[in-house]
Amino acid sequence: MSLWEYANPARFMATTARAVPVLGGAAALCLLVGLVWGFFFTPEDYRQGSTVKIIYLHVPAALMAINAWLMMLVASLVWLIRRHHVSALAAKAAAPVGVTMTLIALFTGAVWGQPMWGTWWAWDPRLTSFLILFLFYLGYMALWAAIDDPDTAADLTGVLCLVGSVFAVLSRYAVNFWNQGLHQGASLSLDAEENVADVFYYPLLVAIAGFVLLFVALVLLRTRTEIRLRRLHALRLRERAA
Amino acid sequence: MAGMKSLKKKRRIQVIAVAAVALALSTAMIGYAMRDGINYFRAPTQVMDEPPAPSETFRIGGLVEEGTLIRGEGTTVRFSVTDGGASVPVTYTGVLPDLFEEGQGMVGTGRYVNGTFEASEILAKHDETYMPKEVVDALKEQGVFQHAPGEAPAAPNG
Image (tube, rainbow over all chains, first blue to last red; front, top):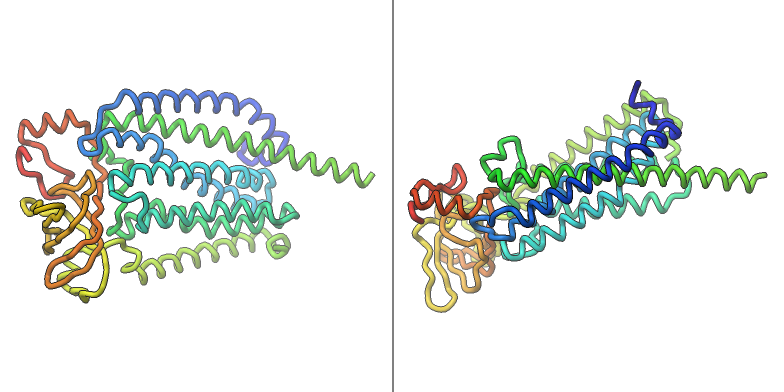
């Protein structure tokens, strides 16, 4: 059994019909546990006080904002190379979810930055590339909406997605390339025990799992809607022709 | 893009690979060439090596050197910012952010006049250390608390 079987829309619809409720339920559970644990049952940070709790929204949202774009990149490449329509629709479906994650990360970052750094925005390399990624999301969705022919739209947005990946990668690794920035380094890494105390780390992992599951569930749900929209469109065309 | 549709699969892969390599190369070249503009601040060593003109406004960043912070009359403060190599004296009039303290990172905007950095804005830089307050208090009591690894150690009981 190969992954490419899901390029068949009927097969995709049958499997996701069962997967979406399970994923959605798991996402709700993880988010509830992670956020309640993080907001109400963790101590205050030694320097940030209770402002540290924004980490439970900011880090997972920023992580998924970047991962969503990379997922769109993979889906777009599958479309450009193998011409599977479900793949192109999955990329299209992920964009509004990704842009929402980006907005959450931008907003929580500003709320954290105002009391901690002393400014809500700085033209730091990481912040700037993340803002450009946000604009790319808007452009990506606008391009899908602007072109009538679905295959042409999928081709062009696929190329746009490839270009935008530069800023998705930069917003993750800018702190490594240009080390004189305002934003701190990665809060999460394999040696994270050194930086983030376990008492903050474990609820953060649960919250991240919740955001990942929520993203997957929403993208599958929205892809199903896109597939149905396309069927509806095809049926209407047939009706008009008859 | 009718072009993509008419190409054979192998050629499509080639086009995408060339595009990806070109993107990565151009990003690397732009990023390297413009690194001075992309970096948010200059280190004290850079400022000492090439002192900017008194009219130039730029940002300086580093650690607030231990034992140099003087809160003067009113809201004027003086301290030195260091990167381990060089140290630059700073004056600033205004409200400091919550996280500003000795041994911690800061970024200041201002001008370098007569060997002193006259800051018009001070931001605190947060390292990626997250620790519960109780744990730090206990460590400080035992005199073994240090800030992030690799940074200047905090004075005991500090």
